[in-house]
Structures are given as C-alpha cells and as structure tokens.
Length: 325
Image (cartoon, rainbow, N blue to C red):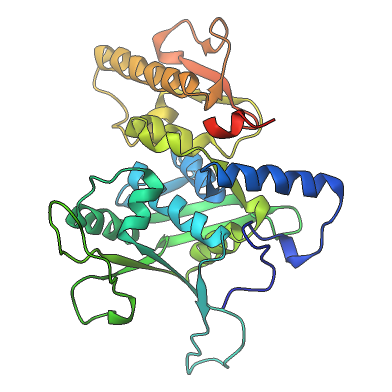
C-alpha cells in the first residue's frame, strides 16, 4: 500500500510534488550512483534523538539505544526509502474508519539484515535476540526532531515513556506463517529456517520516523563501512550524523551517547574515558566519517573541561563511488 510518491529506485519527495529542475536531477543521479555502489539510506531523526540522549533531553528509561538498534533502524529506513513497506488502517470501534494509515509495517528477512551490515556470521538466535531488543528501548522526554514534511522542517515530539516500534518474529512456527521464509541456511546449521522480522510502527514517534524515512530529505546516505567499525565508534557517529554545522562535544556527552557509565569514579577513570573518546574520534576520522584539524580540535587544558570540535564529513561517498567522475 505504498503511496504514489515514490520514484522507482530512489526515495520519495515531500508531498509527492514534481521536481524536475537540473539541481534535483543532478542530486538524483548522484544518489542513484551511490545506491548502485552499495550505499545505504539512514533516517535522520533517530540520530537527533541519540544526540539529545547525550545532552539529557531524552532519557532511555529501559533498554539501550546501542549500535545494534541503530543498525536495525537503518535497515528499516533503507527498506522504507526503497518503497518496501505496507500500511494498515486499524479501524478501532471507538472511532470512525478513515483511509489514513495508522500502522506501518516493514518485513526484514534474516539474510537481508546480514547483507545490510555485511556480516554473515550472525546466528539465527543472535538475530532474534537483537531484534527483540528494539521494543525494549523505551524513551521519555520532549525534543524537536528533523521532519521533512512540517512547515519549518522540525517537529516537536513528546515521549510518554514509549518505545520506537513493535517487533514480531516469524520463525519455524505457525504464528505469522504468512511471513515465514522459504530460505534455509547452508553450511553450519544447514536446513534451518531463517527468521523473518515484522516491525510495526504506530505510536507518534514511530509514525514520524516512518514518514520521515519515506522522503529524500528525511534520509541520509550511509557508508556501510560504518557497520564494520567498533561499536562505540558507530554509536558516536550515529548521534552526530544529522549535524551540518560545527559539532562540540565533551566527555560527559560522548560517554552518554556511547552508553558508558557517567560520572566516572575517579580521575584515573576520567583519563581513561578521555583516551577512549580520542580513540573513537580518530577511528571516525581515519575512516573519513568526520573532519578535524589535529592542532585545534581538542579544547580544555584541564582534564575536567575536555571537549572536541569537528565536522561530519560533507558529501560522504562510499569507496566505489569516489572512483566515478
């Protein structure tokens, strides 16, 4: 039940309007080439929420918004952006039935997620475990998120201790049998059916995430190389990728973004944490996810005042794409 806004092979545009000028055509050409070269599409607002978590505007009251949750939501966003979703009208008896979709659904098969993160060694049981963690991530707080279909491109979101989406698993059971996979594993575990994950978005933020991922300006190109970096480097980048201006982040904020304990017990642990932040930032720079000047990016002479300034790398393209003129 996808809308008619979709451009085949590309993500949707705001309001389904026709945009035929040369700038848009050039953008579409670059996007198509990036996707053909293996780029992924990631939704933007979840990055802002991770950033706000580090700044105490959003609380994660259960679960963890960790690197695996981000990977799963990126995989969802990529499928939405390519128009692989469907919607439902729930039609509860307490209100009139309308044609407006009230729940959106994405189906992800086990092998699709493995291919998305480029890791074939994930077992069925591990996949089931990490997907079942998504609804356990419960958020609370008020914030603004990037939202391409609002008038000013921002949306106020109020969490009343709600999760992001629901997850059901179709796997060697009659339950959800219409979604079960006909694929069997090869090699170790040969003949075992792969799990299929049904992700359901129906609460206010889940609907905002979904509708944002439908549109070109609600998404970003993501280099799959990110998913091969250390988990803490992934978590740090996932929280900053939405930023287009100078980023300033201190030890406390970086720690909270990376799901590390804060405050630390003593000065020795603080030095250790600072070294970890430096290491993760260097990994992101060396892999061309961020830019900074080695002489000026670290601020604060006192250990308690340490902070880092840098930019998300502009026009980040994946390796194969860089070879195209």
